[in-house]
Image (cartoon, rainbow, N blue to C red; front, side):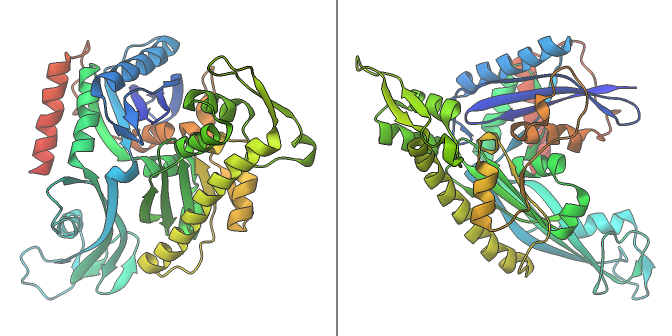
Length: 418
């Protein structure tokens, strides 16, 4: 029996939606998608729920029209400064009674107790645990990717705890509820994007995903198939737009138009003198500049962001995992990854040819733009949640009212927190 999943990425500049159908064998088929300008979101944080609600409704309805179906549930993501992570360790005896000192077979119950122990550390009152991600299991001091079936006395798990601001999570839930949809799950943005764009062998070698968003630049480092750490820099594409606005003396909206129409991070010499028309503002006539000047403004800011990320990754990868180097790939996602020349500039800054824009697999559909790097998060939401057991989910014949949806989500959320 097939079922549908709706991935929703609420970004600073755009809201992206993908509706996919999952058949009984787990195969994905994209039915519809949309990408519309965002409202009520600043630096990845919802600051006006009603404005964001309207944009969410418009985005989902546009995807519904393409798919020819109506949906009632969504899966979404969160990122930016509202997310933080920390390492934690859980240790338990394999014997649940704590009596036997003889090696016993490790079963799922012992694994769950170890994870529960790892997440028992104190979380600040204004945050809630989003994910507990196992990095390594140790059975009597020896490492295993999965301890189930191994004989041992002591089980230890090293994890990464991902926390999120309660208010930020609550605003997302409220926004989706007011839009008339049920929120099924919230996933870390970069974790979702990585699942859609990084192959498992690259995750084992050690890879970096950089999500170049409008309001922030989010990074996740994955090694041995598990996240090592996450970090967010509180500026992204909007900072580039601000630089253009200041240099050329134009409003933000005009600067954004120039960036999208003419912008590049790296130019071939024959392009440098190409004309760029700056629209007239306040009764002034249009002005003319060249692509080189615009490129210098853009590349200067982007290079600064990339260099800061490089410094952070080198420092944190060594501190958190003892890693001197990563042998996998560096994957760029988000709207910023679509900027012409971004890969070439990134390769120069990182002194590596293993840099590329993230590309999602082909899941059919009439519009395959979901394969682009800016759809990595929303496609990752579908891929990460496609195997979720839907037998316990009561399917609704029509959308719940916003009040019903809101009460249902917060009831579940409170149960999880308590």
